[in-house]
Image (cartoon, rainbow, N blue to C red; front, side, top):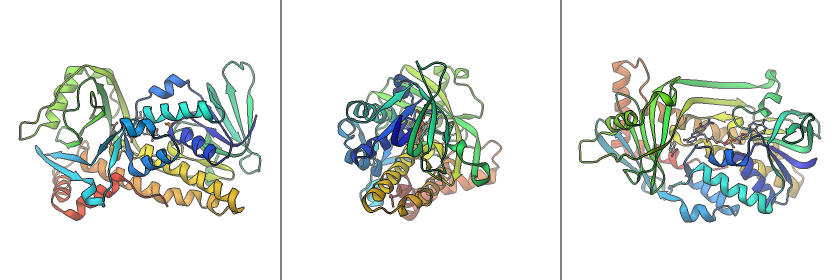
Length: 394
Ligand code: RFL
Ligand code: PHB
């Protein structure tokens, strides 16, 4: 097989890239190790920045999103039983975010790709990227049904959109890689529940017992998270224990109530900050989680992946239009500037709201003072609102 751009991974990064390239008249092949049902059901992010919404719409992938996505003009910060609303449009000159789940973005992009795009192969596991420093890089892969032998995809460019545990990053020699990493001694226990969200906007709660988040998937489905110690298994928590703990952490001084409902899914997400520099090695480009991870507190993971592939697609189009590789050469640097802003924001939101094990009384007071600062200073609130609604693409 041969193509212009070989894309490894059909998460949001790989799927959107295939769509953007197709719209620019550039052919590609997407290799995805899992099956379609798995990719469409994997429960992950829920918040799209304004810039992400604009990109999906312009790519012709916004029809259902525009119909079913829920526009949110703010979030609530909850601490010491008080509630403080951050008003996004008022603080940012009109920006907001959209609640539309990653599962739905992927479903929409898969349907479009299968209908009008190039090959998208499920059950095709990339084994290695080779020849990244030549002008004919290759992806070796194993395709279900082709037992006993390996296939090869010859490309002009390879984009590794294969997530944090993929193979693309491994093709960059260790001597040229710089890794920046931080792990956190806690994770998030997330549930989906068949109950209307108890608040019409997301609630980020800081509590002595740990962080809690109220989010949603639709007017009838709630998504809720609890900070839990690192290494916790979802099965350790009974449904009623989860609701009891959520109730404690969301408690307010007024008559707000948390509605309970049947829990339909339960899982634990670890927390990590990670950046691999550079995001390019010869004709291999890394995009999305393959190059960087943020803790989910800032809701940035999916949005960063979108920024990377837009940058790549524009750079390759520029090469086709002008013959200049200048933008491709600037890919890594351009992406990393935005990535580090999102890393900073996600780190700030995480340390603002989570209870670190062994936090000293001094650190506790500083954390509350940071929250009070956001609640009382227009400048501090604006900083949070700008970070949450997203940093512009260059
Ligand atoms: P993805 O979505 O991980 O997609 C990568 C795809 O590559 C495939 N793959 C391979 N295919 C072929 N050959 C191989 N060798 C392959 N190895 C892997 C995988 O099967 C997969 O389909 O990366 P992408 O596209 O960069 O998108 C990034 C986002 O998915 C990610 O940033 C966010 O989902 C992060 N994230 C969350 N972000 C939020 O903003 N809010 C959240 O609540 C939230 N929850 C989460 C998350 C990430 C999680 N991970 C990675 C474990 C919850 C989880 C559990
Ligand atoms: C989600 O709805 O899954 C979600 C929302 C906001 C976050 C993280 C996750 O910060």
